[in-house]
Amino acid sequence: MAFHRIFVIDFAGLGLGEASDANRFQSVGADTLGHVAVSWPDKLNLPTLQQLGLGNIRVDHPVPGVPPVDHPAGFFGRLHVQAEGNRRATGLREMWDFTGRERTESVFDTLPTAGYDVSLAGPFLSYLQTQDLAQRYQLGSNQDAFRILYDRLYQPASGLTYVVLPDFRFAGSQQDPHAFGESLESADRYLTQVKHDMGANDLLIVTATHADDPTMAVTPTREYLPLLAYSPSRPSAHALGIRRTLADVGATVLENFGLAAYAAGHSFLNEITQ
Image (cartoon, rainbow, N blue to C red; front, side):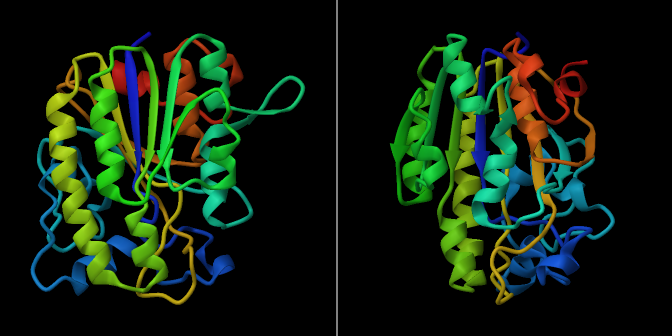
Protein backbone atom coordinates (compact mmCIF):
# COMPACT_ATOMS: atom_id res chain seq x y z
CA MET A 1 0.00 0.00 0.00
CA ALA A 2 1.61 3.25 -1.15
CA PHE A 3 -0.81 5.56 0.69
CA HIS A 4 -2.71 4.96 3.92
CA ARG A 5 -5.58 7.27 3.00
CA ILE A 6 -6.80 8.80 -0.26
CA PHE A 7 -8.91 11.97 -0.40
CA VAL A 8 -10.62 12.80 -3.70
CA ILE A 9 -12.20 16.24 -4.10
CA ASP A 10 -14.57 16.56 -7.05
CA PHE A 11 -14.71 20.17 -8.30
CA ALA A 12 -17.86 19.11 -10.18
CA GLY A 13 -18.32 21.62 -13.00
CA LEU A 14 -14.69 22.71 -13.48
CA GLY A 15 -13.68 22.20 -17.11
CA LEU A 16 -10.38 23.10 -18.78
CA GLY A 17 -11.45 23.69 -22.36
CA GLU A 18 -13.33 21.87 -25.10
CA ALA A 19 -12.62 18.16 -25.38
CA SER A 20 -11.68 16.52 -28.67
CA ASP A 21 -15.30 15.41 -29.16
CA ALA A 22 -16.88 18.72 -28.06
CA ASN A 23 -18.63 19.14 -31.42
CA ARG A 24 -20.83 16.14 -30.65
CA PHE A 25 -22.15 17.81 -27.50
CA GLN A 26 -22.70 21.42 -28.61
CA SER A 27 -19.60 22.40 -26.65
CA VAL A 28 -17.26 23.88 -29.25
CA GLY A 29 -15.59 26.87 -27.59
CA ALA A 30 -16.37 25.71 -24.05
CA ASP A 31 -13.71 26.65 -21.50
CA THR A 32 -15.04 26.88 -17.96
CA LEU A 33 -11.85 27.95 -16.19
CA GLY A 34 -10.72 30.26 -18.97
CA HIS A 35 -14.07 32.00 -19.32
CA VAL A 36 -14.45 32.44 -15.57
CA ALA A 37 -10.92 33.87 -15.40
CA VAL A 38 -11.50 36.48 -18.12
CA SER A 39 -14.88 37.40 -16.60
CA TRP A 40 -13.33 38.02 -13.17
CA PRO A 41 -12.97 41.74 -12.33
CA ASP A 42 -9.42 41.19 -11.06
CA LYS A 43 -7.14 38.21 -11.58
CA LEU A 44 -8.30 34.93 -10.02
CA ASN A 45 -6.52 34.26 -6.75
CA LEU A 46 -5.98 30.49 -6.60
CA PRO A 47 -2.56 30.11 -4.94
CA THR A 48 -3.00 26.56 -3.65
CA LEU A 49 -4.42 25.15 -6.88
CA GLN A 50 -1.71 27.02 -8.77
CA GLN A 51 0.98 25.55 -6.51
CA LEU A 52 -0.43 22.06 -7.11
CA GLY A 53 -0.06 22.58 -10.85
CA LEU A 54 -3.42 23.78 -12.17
CA GLY A 55 -1.77 26.35 -14.45
CA ASN A 56 0.77 23.79 -15.64
CA ILE A 57 -1.98 21.70 -17.20
CA ARG A 58 -2.52 24.44 -19.79
CA VAL A 59 0.94 25.75 -20.66
CA ASP A 60 -0.17 25.92 -24.31
CA HIS A 61 -3.16 28.11 -23.45
CA PRO A 62 -2.45 29.88 -20.13
CA VAL A 63 -5.31 30.77 -17.80
CA PRO A 64 -5.36 34.50 -16.90
CA GLY A 65 -4.31 34.82 -13.27
CA VAL A 66 -3.27 31.16 -12.99
CA PRO A 67 0.06 30.85 -14.84
CA PRO A 68 2.21 27.70 -14.61
CA VAL A 69 4.78 27.48 -11.82
CA ASP A 70 8.36 26.31 -12.22
CA HIS A 71 8.17 23.62 -9.55
CA PRO A 72 4.60 22.42 -8.97
CA ALA A 73 3.94 20.54 -5.75
CA GLY A 74 1.50 18.17 -7.40
CA PHE A 75 1.31 15.84 -10.37
CA PHE A 76 -0.92 17.34 -13.05
CA GLY A 77 -2.86 16.24 -16.12
CA ARG A 78 -6.20 16.18 -17.90
CA LEU A 79 -9.01 13.65 -18.01
CA HIS A 80 -11.20 12.92 -21.03
CA VAL A 81 -14.67 11.46 -20.57
CA GLN A 82 -14.75 8.22 -22.55
CA ALA A 83 -18.49 7.52 -22.28
CA GLU A 84 -20.82 8.33 -25.15
CA GLY A 85 -23.21 10.27 -22.92
CA ASN A 86 -22.65 13.63 -21.29
CA ARG A 87 -24.99 13.92 -18.33
CA ARG A 88 -23.72 15.03 -14.94
CA ALA A 89 -23.80 11.47 -13.63
CA THR A 90 -21.95 10.10 -16.68
CA GLY A 91 -18.48 11.04 -15.48
CA LEU A 92 -19.28 10.06 -11.91
CA ARG A 93 -20.17 6.53 -12.97
CA GLU A 94 -17.20 6.31 -15.32
CA MET A 95 -14.78 7.32 -12.59
CA TRP A 96 -16.02 4.77 -10.05
CA ASP A 97 -17.87 1.96 -11.93
CA PHE A 98 -16.32 -1.19 -13.42
CA THR A 99 -17.50 -4.55 -14.76
CA GLY A 100 -17.13 -7.25 -12.14
CA ARG A 101 -17.24 -11.00 -12.59
CA GLU A 102 -21.03 -11.15 -12.43
CA ARG A 103 -22.32 -7.57 -12.47
CA THR A 104 -21.37 -3.90 -12.60
CA GLU A 105 -19.66 -2.97 -9.36
CA SER A 106 -18.08 0.17 -7.95
CA VAL A 107 -14.97 1.18 -6.07
CA PHE A 108 -17.26 2.34 -3.29
CA ASP A 109 -18.46 -1.17 -2.49
CA THR A 110 -15.25 -3.03 -3.39
CA LEU A 111 -13.13 -1.20 -0.81
CA PRO A 112 -15.44 -1.83 2.20
CA THR A 113 -15.74 -5.49 1.23
CA ALA A 114 -11.95 -5.65 1.43
CA GLY A 115 -11.96 -4.00 4.87
CA TYR A 116 -11.28 -0.35 4.01
CA ASP A 117 -13.38 2.62 5.09
CA VAL A 118 -15.19 4.65 2.43
CA SER A 119 -16.83 8.02 3.10
CA LEU A 120 -18.94 9.81 0.48
CA ALA A 121 -20.18 13.39 0.76
CA GLY A 122 -22.10 15.42 -1.78
CA PRO A 123 -25.48 16.56 -3.09
CA PHE A 124 -26.73 13.06 -3.66
CA LEU A 125 -27.36 11.79 -7.13
CA SER A 126 -29.13 8.45 -7.19
CA TYR A 127 -25.82 6.70 -7.90
CA LEU A 128 -24.27 7.77 -4.60
CA GLN A 129 -27.42 6.92 -2.67
CA THR A 130 -27.09 3.27 -3.65
CA GLN A 131 -23.59 2.83 -2.16
CA ASP A 132 -24.84 1.11 0.97
CA LEU A 133 -21.44 -0.07 2.26
CA ALA A 134 -20.04 3.46 2.48
CA GLN A 135 -20.60 6.16 5.09
CA ARG A 136 -22.70 8.77 3.29
CA TYR A 137 -23.15 12.45 4.06
CA GLN A 138 -25.60 14.71 2.26
CA LEU A 139 -24.60 18.33 1.92
CA GLY A 140 -25.62 21.50 0.12
CA SER A 141 -22.55 23.73 -0.05
CA ASN A 142 -18.80 23.68 -0.53
CA GLN A 143 -18.40 24.83 3.06
CA ASP A 144 -20.27 21.75 4.29
CA ALA A 145 -18.15 19.55 2.03
CA PHE A 146 -14.86 20.81 3.44
CA ARG A 147 -16.18 20.55 6.99
CA ILE A 148 -16.74 16.84 6.43
CA LEU A 149 -13.37 16.51 4.74
CA TYR A 150 -11.61 18.13 7.70
CA ASP A 151 -13.36 15.67 10.01
CA ARG A 152 -12.18 12.71 7.92
CA LEU A 153 -8.62 14.06 7.95
CA TYR A 154 -8.56 13.56 11.71
CA GLN A 155 -9.77 9.95 11.50
CA PRO A 156 -6.99 7.34 11.40
CA ALA A 157 -8.81 4.64 9.43
CA SER A 158 -7.27 3.59 6.14
CA GLY A 159 -9.44 4.07 3.07
CA LEU A 160 -11.09 6.54 0.71
CA THR A 161 -12.91 9.83 1.23
CA TYR A 162 -14.74 11.22 -1.81
CA VAL A 163 -16.23 14.71 -1.58
CA VAL A 164 -18.31 16.44 -4.28
CA LEU A 165 -18.33 20.26 -4.19
CA PRO A 166 -21.85 21.40 -5.21
CA ASP A 167 -21.46 25.17 -5.65
CA PHE A 168 -19.85 24.99 -9.11
CA ARG A 169 -22.77 23.06 -10.53
CA PHE A 170 -25.20 25.70 -9.30
CA ALA A 171 -23.12 28.55 -10.70
CA GLY A 172 -22.77 26.78 -14.03
CA SER A 173 -26.44 25.97 -14.44
CA GLN A 174 -27.36 29.56 -13.48
CA GLN A 175 -24.83 30.91 -16.04
CA ASP A 176 -23.14 32.96 -13.34
CA PRO A 177 -19.37 33.19 -13.96
CA HIS A 178 -18.89 35.54 -11.00
CA ALA A 179 -20.44 33.03 -8.57
CA PHE A 180 -18.25 30.34 -10.13
CA GLY A 181 -15.14 32.46 -9.54
CA GLU A 182 -16.14 33.20 -5.96
CA SER A 183 -16.61 29.48 -5.33
CA LEU A 184 -13.20 28.73 -6.83
CA GLU A 185 -11.40 31.26 -4.64
CA SER A 186 -13.25 30.06 -1.55
CA ALA A 187 -12.49 26.40 -2.30
CA ASP A 188 -8.82 27.26 -2.82
CA ARG A 189 -8.67 28.75 0.67
CA TYR A 190 -10.25 25.63 2.17
CA LEU A 191 -7.83 23.50 0.17
CA THR A 192 -4.90 25.29 1.81
CA GLN A 193 -5.96 23.87 5.18
CA VAL A 194 -6.49 20.39 3.71
CA LYS A 195 -2.98 20.40 2.29
CA HIS A 196 -1.57 21.58 5.62
CA ASP A 197 -3.33 18.87 7.64
CA MET A 198 -2.46 15.89 5.44
CA GLY A 199 -0.22 13.16 6.76
CA ALA A 200 2.91 11.92 5.01
CA ASN A 201 1.14 8.75 3.83
CA ASP A 202 -1.96 10.55 2.49
CA LEU A 203 -2.80 11.19 -1.15
CA LEU A 204 -4.98 14.08 -2.34
CA ILE A 205 -6.59 13.95 -5.78
CA VAL A 206 -8.33 17.07 -7.10
CA THR A 207 -10.46 16.41 -10.15
CA ALA A 208 -13.93 16.90 -11.66
CA THR A 209 -16.55 14.53 -13.07
CA HIS A 210 -18.15 17.02 -15.46
CA ALA A 211 -17.85 20.59 -16.73
CA ASP A 212 -20.40 23.42 -16.57
CA ASP A 213 -19.19 26.47 -18.50
CA PRO A 214 -21.34 29.32 -17.07
CA THR A 215 -20.97 31.35 -20.27
CA MET A 216 -22.69 28.73 -22.43
CA ALA A 217 -26.35 27.75 -22.66
CA VAL A 218 -25.68 24.00 -22.88
CA THR A 219 -25.10 22.15 -19.63
CA PRO A 220 -23.04 20.21 -18.88
CA THR A 221 -20.31 21.06 -21.39
CA ARG A 222 -17.94 18.50 -22.90
CA GLU A 223 -14.49 19.55 -21.75
CA TYR A 224 -11.23 18.15 -20.51
CA LEU A 225 -11.28 17.83 -16.73
CA PRO A 226 -8.51 18.57 -14.21
CA LEU A 227 -6.34 15.97 -12.54
CA LEU A 228 -4.05 17.02 -9.69
CA ALA A 229 -2.41 14.56 -7.30
CA TYR A 230 -0.43 15.54 -4.21
CA SER A 231 1.21 13.84 -1.25
CA PRO A 232 3.59 15.38 1.32
CA SER A 233 5.82 12.32 0.83
CA ARG A 234 6.34 13.06 -2.89
CA PRO A 235 8.50 16.21 -3.09
CA SER A 236 8.96 16.12 -6.88
CA ALA A 237 6.15 16.02 -9.42
CA HIS A 238 5.60 15.89 -13.16
CA ALA A 239 2.92 15.77 -15.84
CA LEU A 240 0.46 12.89 -16.04
CA GLY A 241 -0.60 13.73 -19.58
CA ILE A 242 -4.09 13.34 -21.01
CA ARG A 243 -5.89 10.34 -19.53
CA ARG A 244 -8.35 8.66 -21.88
CA THR A 245 -10.95 7.89 -19.23
CA LEU A 246 -12.03 9.08 -15.79
CA ALA A 247 -11.79 5.43 -14.73
CA ASP A 248 -8.04 5.99 -14.28
CA VAL A 249 -8.84 7.66 -10.94
CA GLY A 250 -10.79 4.66 -9.69
CA ALA A 251 -8.08 2.32 -10.98
CA THR A 252 -5.45 4.25 -9.03
CA VAL A 253 -7.45 3.98 -5.82
CA LEU A 254 -7.99 0.25 -6.27
CA GLU A 255 -4.33 -0.46 -7.06
CA ASN A 256 -3.24 1.48 -4.01
CA PHE A 257 -5.25 -0.82 -1.78
CA GLY A 258 -4.16 -4.00 -3.50
CA LEU A 259 -7.30 -4.46 -5.60
CA ALA A 260 -5.94 -3.72 -9.07
CA ALA A 261 -7.48 -6.87 -10.54
CA TYR A 262 -10.94 -5.28 -10.28
CA ALA A 263 -10.09 -2.00 -12.00
CA ALA A 264 -11.21 -0.45 -15.23
CA GLY A 265 -8.95 2.23 -16.71
CA HIS A 266 -5.21 2.55 -16.19
CA SER A 267 -3.83 3.40 -12.79
CA PHE A 268 -1.30 6.23 -12.51
CA LEU A 269 -0.11 5.03 -9.07
CA ASN A 270 3.33 4.03 -10.37
CA GLU A 271 3.71 7.42 -12.03
CA ILE A 272 3.35 9.23 -8.71
CA THR A 273 5.32 6.80 -6.52
CA GLN A 274 8.47 6.23 -8.56
